[in-house]
Image 1 (tube, one colour):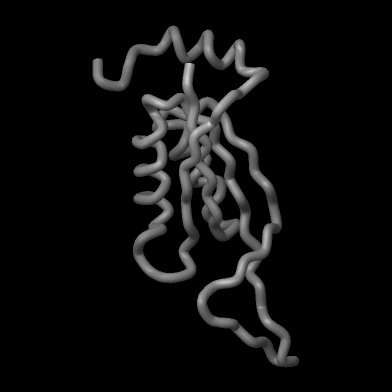
Image 2: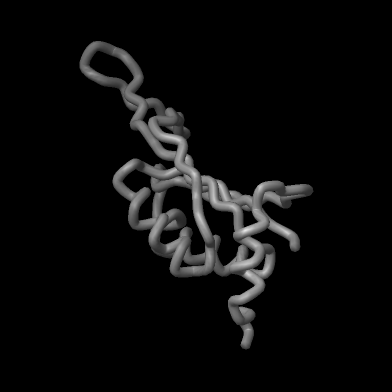
Length: 116
């Protein structure tokens, strides 16, 4: 079975909603890396002249290949990632090899295909 890794970089307040969306769209789980820092195109300077960096979460979602595009599309739509600057980004990468997924694969094989 082939997998894709979707990485979503968003403000912390969107994390729970996007986890629900990923699950509803066919993902079987996710890992969250909290309090990542990111910089945008323009610096935001605070009152003491220091750059303000909003904490973000990185959501890592390992998805079966046939479900990956749908999961990514739903994350972008619900997260509003294409609406304006600073809403977050999502990327999808090929996974060459994934281990520790025996039980996930059993569950996925029991589910009917998305196009059925």
